[in-house]
Image (cartoon, rainbow, N blue to C red):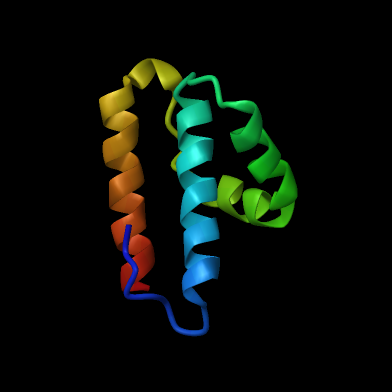
Length: 81
C-alpha cells in the first residue's frame, strides 16, 4: 500500500480507503470476511460506496489472479491522475 499519501488526505484516511478496497476485492473474489471486517465496512459505508464504483468490473470466474492484477492496474492508474 502506498503510504506516501495523496494530496489532501491524512495517513488514516488513506489507510481506511485502502483497507475498504482490499476487503471489497476479497469479498468480490468469494472470500468470507470475518465479523470484524464486515463491521469495518459497515462503519465506513460512505467509503465503501465510493470504492465500489471504482472497482474493476471483472467477473469472478475470470480467476483470482486476474482480478488482483486488474485491481493493481487500477490502483496505479488512480495514483497517476
